[in-house]
Length: 144
Image (cartoon, rainbow, N blue to C red; front, side, top):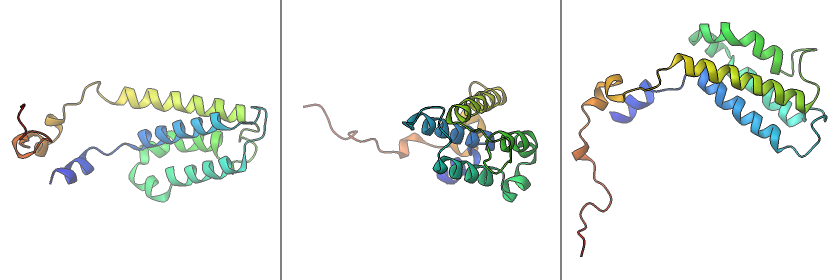
């Protein structure tokens, strides 16, 4: 049906998911009350490790070869707490790296997608969907 079609045809690409995660992490950095010269909090390090594992898991490696080839090495070098010697030592350095990645991913996502996407051209189910089948709240009321 309609939900299956939308759920399968319009899934976010790995770049879009990673961009959303980077954006959320950046906001998390802004919420820390500590000085920006402070060490990266343990909770944030743990979260970044999880992000690296999730975004570049074996499943992702198999399904999205180009994505992994393009981003894995540099992303892990910049943002994986397990990468010895290259992980940021301060919160401000981490914030700068996240900003860099947000810009890179944002640019790539915008460059790879058309400015306008007409859903009716992308999906036969949506094209054949009849709006008359949908009841709109209040459609049976008349003005008194």
